[in-house]
Image (cartoon, rainbow, N blue to C red; front, side, top):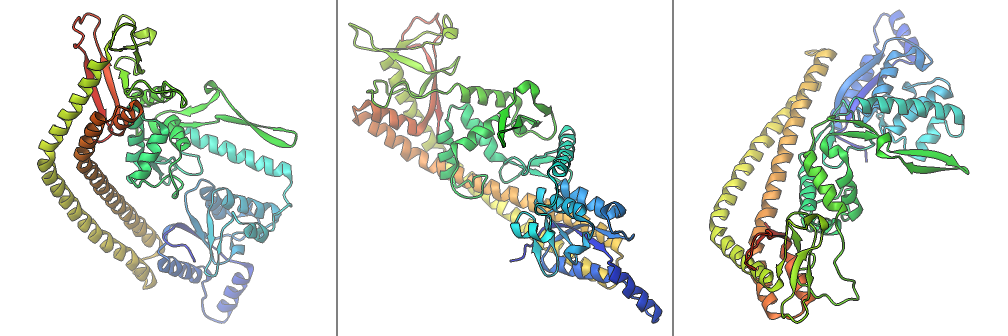
Length: 515
């Protein structure tokens, strides 16, 4: 199946036979413009397959080699920089019929940037073995020449990175990339990145976050399957989300015929700061990474008997580390306290039973508050959805009308109402308008989806809280109590000032998994 709706350049070039045919037509008393004919055919192709024509490049000079043809040089440079999805040509040999060096340069430009070559009869994907054979460059270009070309491309990539441009094969999840290789937030996925960082700051682990995203129906970066904990880890460490472009983090050394990768220290990284709009404030980024690196597993081995139902739930308000439970000899009640040296003299413990009872009472109060708010929230939800659905109808109507206007441009060009320059100008204006409308539609649809997920979660809050409270009272199993609390609580922060003398005088704050 042929691809559709791609951003494309059109490249036109006369062959020697075309020039001879034009001369013959002229000698017989009529004109025959090959480029005009080819342009019309490729524009019809673009119209039928709904491609967006970014620009049209016509080679007005004849030349066997790339160095003699400035327009193909411009096209290849734009292709290498990733400015388009495909190039439309009448035939593959229109791109070049020079020596193997030229053909190798053309092939690599399209291969490295994953750009398609589309003709009226075929679609060539340079990443396939067949395309490599078609270009005839397999095992022909010398290793040193290939290395030289690769180095030049790397220098170009590094120069682009210094300018704050994204040089990765794909933009980071949560971002899109414009024609200048600058990143900007993706309306469909930017909220996911913010959600991940918030959850990490709240104390959630990567496995837990991955499972939550799967349960919410969020599609992972690969486009299919399930979220991987390692993906969450890499996102938390990715400085692109605070507006930085980072490159040269690794070095490759060839040893024994194989390349070995070595991670460089941060001092040797190349960083372009404030390169694009950040999704996460720098302070959030630091807090998330501190929380992530500071996470530790439950304070008991799988083979050990859990003795604290608050394990992995209760944390110190000052250091965010676990509050530990300590049995006391000759006393019926265990104590709780933070063992981090930095909190010594700033925080003191209290009786375990008092804290446990306070947490259960706080969950009861939370349940009552949700029951009181339920009716009001339902009315707000219905009004919000109705407003957004009306906006979608409006934008869909605008989108249909604008696409129809863009389709008419081809008719105006064919009838001579527009010349090529006017066509290109109007096409670019309408394409930008279509892109803007589509982005607005995507954003509103994402907001509706988020609102529905949020409403669903809220509807589940009350029965879940009641179920946990009932089950907690009925069971004596410590591990089961711990599991129940973790189904509704991310964590509970604890603080008790050293000057407070009453055992029951302390502060706790619940951080619910369900909002």
